[in-house]
Image 1 (cartoon, helix red, strand yellow):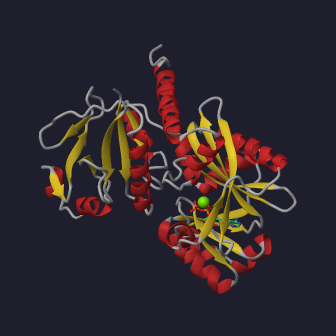
Image 2 (cartoon, helix red, strand yellow):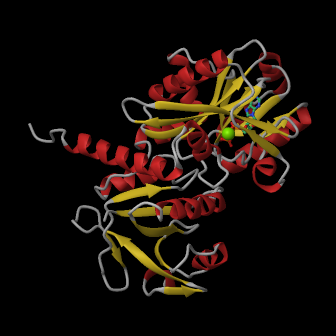
Image 3 (cartoon, rainbow, N blue to C red):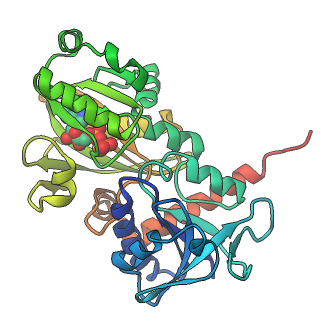
Length: 373
Ligand SMILES: Nc1ncnc2c1ncn2[C@@H]1O[C@H](COP(=O)(O)OP(=O)(O)O)[C@@H](O)[C@H]1O
Ligand SMILES: [Mg+2]
């Protein structure tokens, strides 16, 4: 039986969502013949092998964050109903994943990362899987980095002629040169201000005047050293799930109906009535086909493989703008990505089987490349 290393948690503002996504994936994997090795990345980025009968409770996992430097480096830690074994990684060896306490090797045939945001969705973890020489689900290093960096992504979209909101990018050292009047003249009002590399709407604000604009910039700079200021696009907020390597497929389209017109962190995760998901989206068949086509073009343009959720705006005039791409989209029981595929006719277990298969295919292709000449 193949052994899947389910990696979750992580050093990012989306840690909690990752734990919920992983719990759901763990449940789906139990429906297919697959051995699941649960690997928790704590908030400092330390890896633990989780031994527990059921998927661990968030509170127990949290205890793996209260460790001192010496305690997490050695013995297994008991926290409630779980045992967390610190892991050490040994790139360049045949058994690269081992328990730190006794050197016991952990067999992992394939990694399935579900770590959202920085350090997980941005190529960093993907690079680690390469150095451990194991296949992994999802986009490769460069596509992950590109998908995470909204500013770099827009450069590539523009080059391919794919529309996205007009914007300005600022680094923290340019903070003092941000002129509200100039930007307002160029991009209008309201403006959306966001960290370049974040997710789950963390640090994203809508600015309607100079005061809220200043606050929005401060807020965004708390989460990244680079921010984007965008014109507002008025339209339906719609999402398309994409699956595949060389021949990706697009799902039916879903729609987000945020209560106050802005799909904020609160509306995503805190306010139960903050937003509704509508599947299929309230759009025409022609619009739906156009969105699917653009989502596939976006997926290819950004070098994606495996999976991605492409988020767009559809205006009253029928214009489609790409808002962003998520290369490790939420995978909770109610998340858009798995639900879109289910409604397209691909069950959750079949979706995971397909993702694991795509990862193996890519590794085979990469391994077939010559490294000597
Ligand atoms: N240019 C824009 N015009 C209108 N709404 C926007 C714009 N940019 C972001 N939003 C709103 O803010 C939300 C979060 O922004 P987004 O860029 O998707 O960040 P994140 O990666 O954190 O999800 C979007 O889902 C949307 O509701
Ligand atoms: Mg978003």
